[in-house]
Image 1: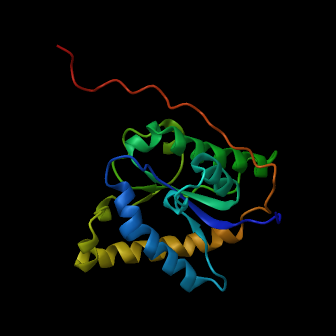
Image 2 (image 1 turned 180 degrees about the vertical axis):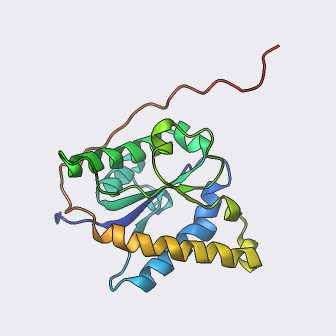
Image 3 (image 1 turned 90 degrees about the horizontal axis):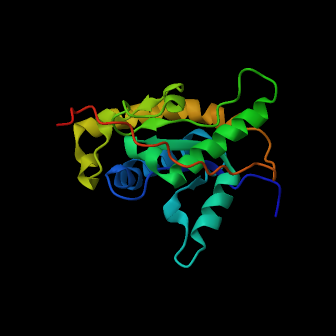
Length: 196
């Protein structure tokens, strides 16, 4: 196996329930792929969890793809931070940022979080990062592409891609020693509703 990255981007999203996975498949991933391809002189490779073929060994293939990706784009929702797989992906890349930083106080950016829905219930470590919000354009349905609002989504994604091109180019050289973290989710936050 060559000591190189296989993927430029690993899109991390919660696959079970909710609209995030449909939004990623129908809108976010296809436009991101095209816009990145239009802005660089190489073929961009993006990993989605749906990329694991039928019969593939799910955890091993996702783990290997994560180790061989330059950056992580987590598609964040409150339940994203309750999903063990999503947490492993976030914390794995956060650990890599620490390793790359070494003694430096300013680690490189290897996590580029986007907000799919409500960010109030994100954990503290997520709130420490600046995120790009797509809450105004988080419609999962395919026909959303035929609306005027979709043009605003496309413009926001174009601005995002300008930053991503630079971040991808600054990724550290690949290492077979990149760790994979598997933290458990935090306990649920107490309800804000009064108990009777």
